[in-house]
Length: 345
Image 1 (cartoon, one colour):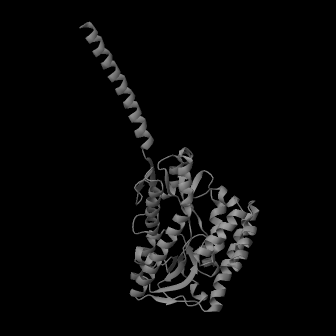
Image 2 (cartoon, rainbow, N blue to C red):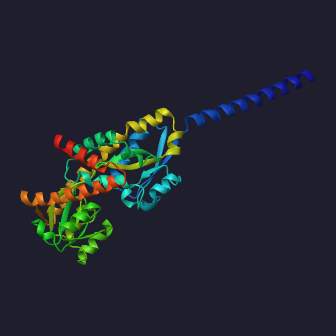
Image 3 (cartoon, rainbow, N blue to C red):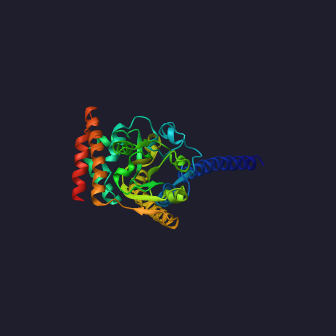
């Protein structure tokens, strides 16, 4: 009887130890198989092209990692303030997200002034090709982004000149108040107009109240902001700007990722770039169609007027480059390289 009790006791001890070992092993196995959750924040939501492309990228990352990475998106500004996005990203408010230098007051002197160097390069693929070569030759262009991991570079969109009155020649801009960004404003001033920094969400009402006479905007805004209801003319100037990084990952989050997962993100930078370009192509086609259906008149400058218009951009960008030189940046060298490559491609 005593021997039986001892046997039962040892069996119970063995079961307890086995159970504990099994539990530890099970916990380790679950931990090993647990997906890495990464948050993504953006001020955009479907059907905006930025959101469309981001959703495609999220699906691709999750697929290429076989579910080892799960990205939790926060659309429509639910977790992000565009004006504070870089600070929020650095502070870990979100792990990855849309951060635009256009909303930041300082810290991106070279990047913001580099953008208008592409004013006359309307082909997105050509812009990307030139930008890749320029960034390789002038790595200083990426130094302003060294605090974050770059995940995508927006290709840049083409802007058209919408107006309530026709702009058939450059002289028609004189006396007009127009929404622009950066160098656009300096160009408008040189052409006798008044440049205004107005957020896109305020353009419609400003045109309606005749605070603005026109604006430089991409085609897709005819769908997103229904500009066909308020403007009657669009001059197809196709001004453009450089590609630039616009989606990033917090460096601490990046450094904790396994090397093979990091490779998946790196391998999908080009995928995201292309997805965004395609999303904007589709959106711009829809915007052009909406403008036609609204009865908007499409205008093109005759060659001599187009030359006057873009010569003004050339003057403005040359001045910007010289100002960068004075601050210790290779502004003129970068501008000359962009110009040289644009003639090749």
